[in-house]
Image (cartoon, rainbow, N blue to C red; front, side):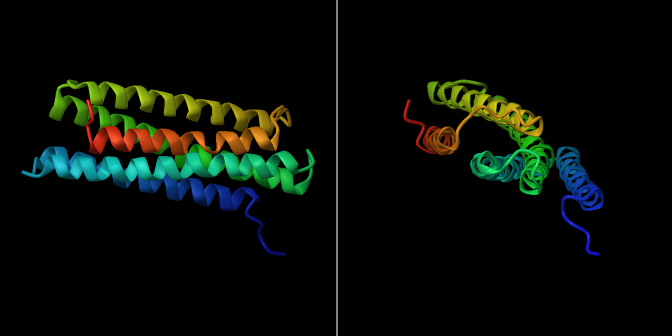
Length: 179
């Protein structure tokens, strides 16, 4: 009998790999801060962008899972599979990526810009809104896990657009700095 991805063993392996990846990421950060290369800003910026991309990928994928999960019969094997996928996406990718994004982003905002600039304040407000969306999705993961989702697939289709709109505005603030 083959092992399913919803079994505990593959989940434990995925969790262990995620912890190793996060530990390596943090070790790289520690080495960079101790080494203090001339291009430390570029290294931090690159790591920040990697975290942002990971966070955005998760924020864009999670509502798609909710759309399909909404159509699954509670208690069915399909529903249980979606629960596992949502939990792993949230805990293994989405939460760590958000935390790293925030820590490195705040470091850059402080060390490079001294938290000055209207564009930066607008960008931070938009990132706070993105974080609110993250919290909404995390609550939905818990509601789906309890088979208590009250939202329709149509609602989740609309919510699937929110991260994209916020991402576009955040990128414009970061690159164009219109204010």
